[in-house]
Image (cartoon, rainbow, N blue to C red; front, side, top):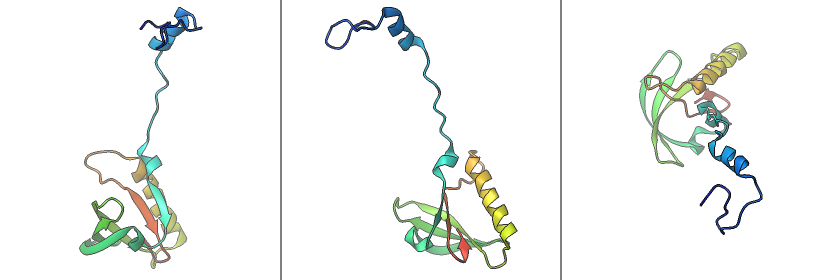
Length: 122
C-alpha cells in the first residue's frame, strides 16, 4: 500500500506530498499527569474501603491496612482527624495533597485518592 492508495486500491484525493507529510510529521505529544487521576471525594470511608488493623500511629493520625472495595487491592490509609485542625491547617493539608499528586518517584509513597468526611481526612 503506497501513501496515496486507500485500502480499496483507489487513489486518494490527497497529494502524495501531503500524505508523506502525514506519515513523517510527528503528532503532538500527549502528556498524562498522575495528578489528573487523583480525586478528592466526600463520603464515608467505608463506602470505598474495608478498614482493617491499624498499622501505626503518628503525630498527625493513624495508618490502617484497608482493602479497596472496587479493585480488591490492599492499601495503607492514613486517617487525619479534623478535631484539632483550624481552617488554615486544613488548607495546608490540601496543599500538601496537591504536591503529592504531582510526585512520581519510587522512594515516595503514591497518593491514590483523598476521602473527606465531617470529622476526618483519609
